[in-house]
Image (cartoon, rainbow, N blue to C red; front, side, top):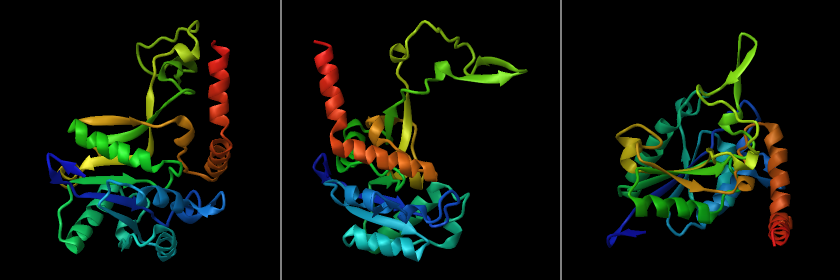
Length: 256
């Protein structure tokens, strides 16, 4: 990818720890007949903008599966102290960047973290985030989706056995339909694209100027527990069947 005629070096990093507590070896558990990690690998290796792609894991079984499905992408054995339950993302990213810059003898301009647990992201989502990061000059671009079932205006907290607005000053107007509420967005945990200095110098995953990259809700499944695998499989069947197009066509006809 060029910016002002200068080639940008862009590193894609897929963290894939083996010690998940919610689901054993979650990152290689089968989803619709394939290991979970294979989905993000397939999307990332087709990117037109990533210079290099690396899978970082402390687990040999995960690295073996990544090698099988990654088509020769770089594998990085992560030290155990960077694979604990409470290990944040930044040290893992810094380790991957440092190791790759040492191996490749280059300095990366942009870093893109891709989470295995968002299996329905596509190559165009990855490249779309990168393109927006470059064209806007922002510090970071993060994938999000529009929330339709949990608008903060409708959320409450319980204080002294009374329901009160979760956000002070936001009284819910029960006459407003759900679809007429102001749009709100949530990170889907899939893609975090940032300038190198955000991670290496600031010690953050995203910087001050963060821009959104909008993805559809049905492709924003974030797998944390076993139940999420069933949701993801349902979403895969939904997308493969063309049901979304059928729904859109029906809605279009109904408004004529």
